[in-house]
Structure formats: C-alpha cells, structure tokens
Amino acid sequence: MIRLTASLTALALLSTAAAAQGISVNSAASIGSGALKEHLGAFPGVPDNSPKAVLDRLNRLCVSDRPSDQKRCEKAWRMINQAHAELQARRAAETAAGDGITN
Image 1 (tube, rainbow, N blue to C red):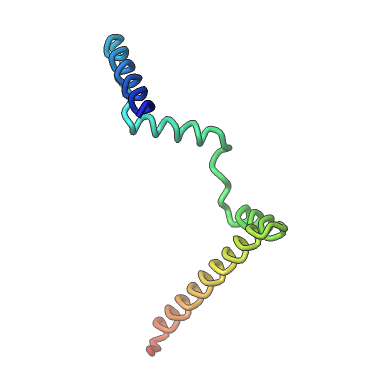
Image 2 (spheres, rainbow, N blue to C red):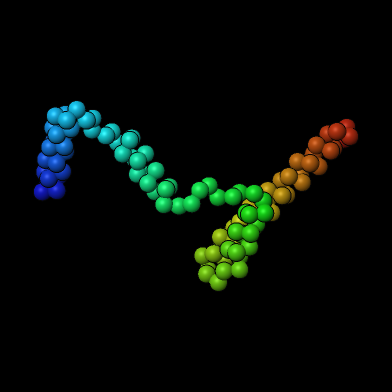
C-alpha cells in the first residue's frame, strides 16, 4: 500500500510539474518504445542471416558441450530436415503435375 501511495504521489507530482513546464507526460507506448530502443542499442546491429552465417552459428552451437546447446542443435537439425523433406515432396509433386501424372 505504501508503494502504491508513493507511486501515485510521484505520478501526480510529475504530471503537475510537466503541465507547469508545458511538457507532456510520456504515454505507456512511448515509454515502452524508449526502453526497447535502449535495449536494442546495447546489442550490435542486425545479425547476418545469410545461409553461410546461419550454418556457422549452428555449427558453433553444435560443438558446444552445454546440454542446452546440444538440445537446440538437435531441434534445429530436426527442423532443417523436416523443411528439406517438405521441399523435396513439393518439388516431386510439381514435377509429377508437370508431367501429367496424378495420384
């Protein structure tokens, strides 16, 4: 209860001071976007998602001794193999449809 009262008091003082200075109080959206901007600013730019870079990161993950990394590696390869199988099936279906073969 004391925290709530202190928070409400601080908010009231802030909004009163802001109104007196002609400054608008930040909305929740602008506060959130500011926090996200600060968070993203702490990390380097957009990662390189080229196939070579992704495979390099996956290989580093797979050679790690950590059990969590090994699980992530296994999951990633399962997903890759599943996507490859779906691609091959789709190509086979397109080829069959192109040849006039139907099942």
